[in-house]
Amino acid sequence: MELNGAIDLPAGAREIHLHWVNKSIPPTLSYESAVEDYKVEYARRYQILMHGDAAGKN
Image (cartoon, rainbow, N blue to C red; front, top):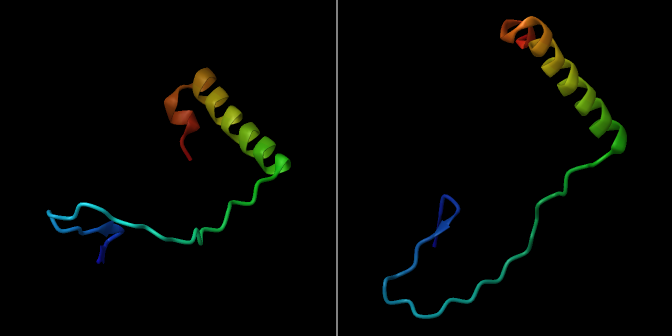
């Protein structure tokens, strides 16, 4: 029985067999997106370094 993503097994269970299908959709990865994310994070950290913690908060 599945409860919130957990399987509840009886204390006397000695053997279990699991069968599943991975239904997750892999994330869409792109070089351009990764570079843009890096630039945004770098700019945020640079602002904090140069102007203090309050400057990096939006």
